[in-house]
Amino acid sequence: MTKTAAKSATAAKTATAARTAAAKPAAAAKPVAKPESHLAMVRRARRINRELAEVYPYAHPELDFRNPFELLVATVLSAQTTDLRVNQTTPAVFAKYPTPEDMAAAVPEELEEAIRPTGFFRAKAKSLIGLSTALRDRFDGEVPGRLEDLVSLPGVGRKTANVVLGNAFGVPGLTVDTHFGRLVRRWKWTEQEDPEKVEAEIAAIFPKSEWTMLSHRVIFHGRRICHSRKPACGACPIAHLCPSYGEGETDPEKARKLLKYEMGGYPGQRLSPPADYPGKPAPARIE
Image (tube, rainbow, N blue to C red):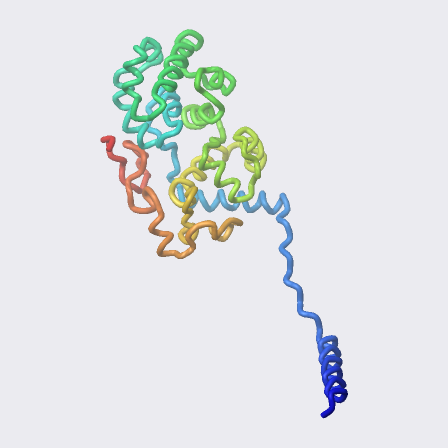
């Protein structure tokens, strides 16, 4: 075959291949997922809340307390530490300072020593003495049951106020701590980072009557399964509703090893948990 004939044959093959390709129907394009509408997100959020209620029917505040003052003090102490550490510390604190009047009269150095295990003890002692003094002088030694009064106390912000209102007074409130904020962003309920903006957006999704228990359920889930660094996706009961599934371990066996507290067969955070709590009480001694 001459060079000219070879070129002609090659050109003919190329033309035939091109005609064949053109005759074939184009491959179906992969469908692009539609962005979730706000209504769909609200429906999904409320379904997550319902399913979490089935998973954690015993959800509760994980700070030990017997009255509003003890809950207020414990919540202030819980900043930058675990509820377990607070619960192991407060029995001795409340034995020595059972009332706002007692704590207002505390020697700062002695109170600091009593709360030292919770960390940041100097700043916390200053807040506790300040809020106790305000309770004594402005509220007749009683913890007020209004948000605007609570946030006027030294060291008390909206998160602390909502914890006290929801669990000591039965006034609905959202507790936007680090767990709550992390999970509602993972679930695409909000993109906000500021706690007050998070609170406002989540409050618009749920009926007010759900706010306190929603907070407990979300925080429970964040502490037990949906951890910050290693979420146990493969052991998550609401994985089918989570747009962030796969950020953590998806293998069921490996994921189960990541579960904490009663979900993993370990003690909880309270020394005196509610009667319906399925796990073991926390150890009273600080290790």
